[in-house]
Image (cartoon, rainbow, N blue to C red):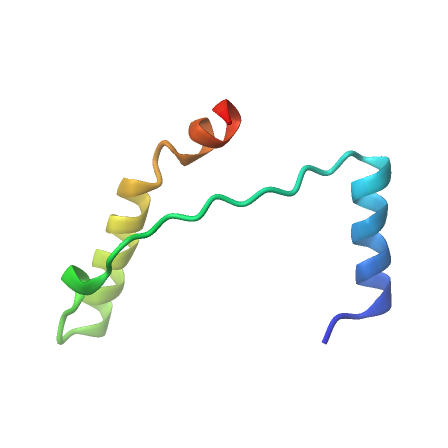
Length: 63
């Protein structure tokens, strides 16, 4: 549940500080990251996401 003060703070940031709220969605299959070892699976997931998202900030700025 959101607290009222957090909602008011967010509205304030949008109005007064011109907070820019945008999202970019990436479709990444994590099927290839499956592993019997949870730690290894987490590392594969991290590596895959950071690999595909490395240019995401620039893409967002270009948009």
